[in-house]
Length: 130
Image (cartoon, rainbow, N blue to C red; front, top):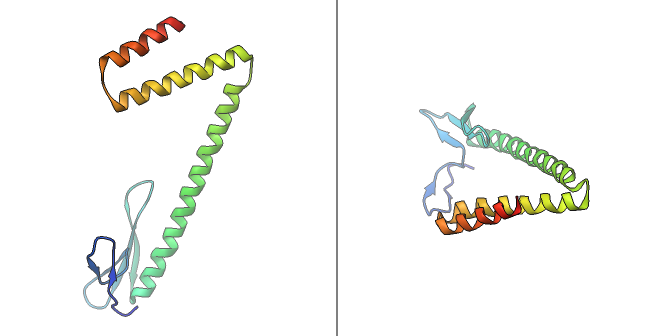
């Protein structure tokens, strides 16, 4: 990959691949941003672009596996919480689902608009359930 120009999506020319920078002389460095901690991680100094990019790619694969594992853990937690809600009496179960849907709807209303009359209407509806 001898000083080829690599173009990115923003129509600007790059002399080196993502994660690789040139230092004084003939040294190249590799850096990557941690996807969870949001901090730059120094991967080292290398003599060629290919070595630096190979190190960057291997670390990127590690981070992708970390993200997949984290998302799988979240899915397991949400499945357990859904099972807890579903167990029990049919009436209780339906009431829990209705309250859950109302809470979700309230969050959406808060995010989308801060109109007072929508919130008042929802609060009046909730008071009627209680």
